[in-house]
Length: 449
Ligand code: HEM
Image (cartoon, rainbow, N blue to C red; front, side):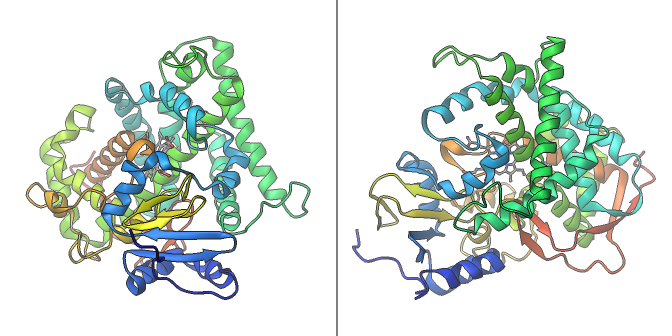
């Protein structure tokens, strides 16, 4: 173990200048840090000692092998807690474990055929009215929102959809601003009308969904029924309080659709800009589905479509990393000593563009994930869903959704960038979005309908 710290930029202003650069463009900032200083970088941000690691071995050490020696860095959690409450995504320790045990059955393999059926139904309602030039980012956000509420909570959003889309925009902007501000803006601070409206609206919709389900007394066997009825058998045998059920409902809705929308919109862009990839994927869809929409049982045959999705999650990873971690005790990572309280970060965005693990990383190449080549990707190099005990609980759900929706799109449409739509520039928000949206032209395929 080395006593010295990893190399990194020095900032006499206690990191203020560095924070400014992270805020302006986190993608460029961390890519630059890796290029300049290598696999481990040390920075000082105000009171925090901050260690960023880019090597797959360090990613595994932090997220898997030494996961218990880290908690989540509380500042971004405090920001999100303003509307997320205290659900699975937000908690640590015993409370987190209890939430995870209660929610996990909703993601049991036996539930996926049913989810896939609901996903396909939601997609049919959306896609069958699309054609011509579309705001693809907005369409995918609407669609994944619908998928989340129909599958997890058994409700069709209807008139609330437009409001919730606006809520998401507002809360994303608030989060990005407050993540890099050292303190939370107090509630009484003026000029927060939009934020308050967004939190109130989201809360109102979620509480109504819960109230309606409680009133009906029905057990529909979906996630919401589980949240309202489940008990923690391995723990205290008790269920979730109303507030905890609310918090998890909000958390799963937010975590479950925004990232999936980002995944889908980048898939759309790659299909539109790479005709040979789209043609190969469409040929597979035609062969496997012969003109029908997919069911869960079809998904294992859609091998190339799955690779397209995996490559999109590599090249345009929807979350640029995982939540920052904070060392609960002195701990060693990659041979470097992290003091108790030190912050530790890993970024899938950077590691998934490292030519050592992904040759020619700027090339969109789905066959990296083909048998024979995929084995060369070291563990810890590809982690769009995180890894270890806090791996995304919705990872199989998300892969099912993305492959299924991509196949349904390919069955119906050809893809092209809309006139004037250049290569979209990714911007890291809560999820990775294209600056200025994404406009595509969807042409109807004769064989599609
Ligand atoms: C392409 C889509 C998705 C991506 C890229 C993604 C990414 C991630 C990542 C990176 C984490 C780990 C965060 C960390 O370790 O700090 C995570 C956690 C989580 N995700 Fe996802 N996610 C996706 C879809 C979903 C879906 C569909 C759901 C729910 C239906 C979901 C629910 C959650 C929850 C609840 C957690 C917290 C788990 C815990 O802390 O135990 N995600 N996600």
